[in-house]
Image 1 (cartoon, helix red, strand yellow):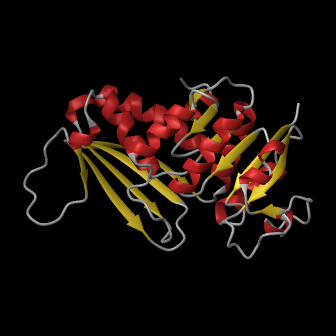
Image 2 (image 1 turned 135 degrees about the horizontal axis):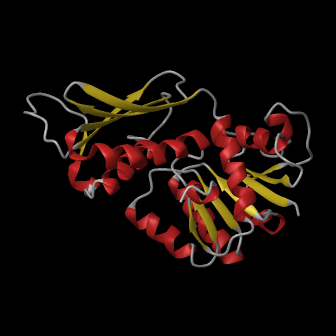
Length: 269
């Protein structure tokens, strides 16, 4: 049975990637709606042409309300405020939603949690299959290496990314902290400057780079005396995220109300 997918932020970099990913997917996944903000100059454009694929007959519209009855699942990689509004609209209609947006406040996350009681939601900091494999490897490494190593998380993204550290970096830190039974809020160190003193073993450090057109690099280092283990993922194209999100949309249609992540989609839990 065909899964009809809607995309918000359809004219943006990730939106166009998602359109392309749907076009390259199996026949049971179909682009059914493309949404942009009301002030966009691209309203009325053909979504296929925006993605460089030629016309597909899906016209970019300014409102989710105008097309929500035509879709089974919405994919949202926009900004927190817009995503929250879309989550609430989808929950009211029982429409599934795949969330790739990051940077939510605690209050916004609570809204998502409540909406998941009404509809199926898949929320992940990163939809890349490779990154999600890294999450499993990080859990294993942390449990084996334990408190005998210093742990640092490095991430780099393009100059336009507005939140830091990245949601993926924070998720990596959370995986490690959970494996070691640490409270990330208490042990995270976000950057260092000046006379910081000797490093405390239990801390988990984060370093952030914003430059050029870097799609996304993440490395977690487990450093001991005489050796270190590094688990790295480097994305060279947004298509890795797009393929994963589209895969999640197809999977989500068959799920009951609840809050899921990409680990659920891939069967890694």
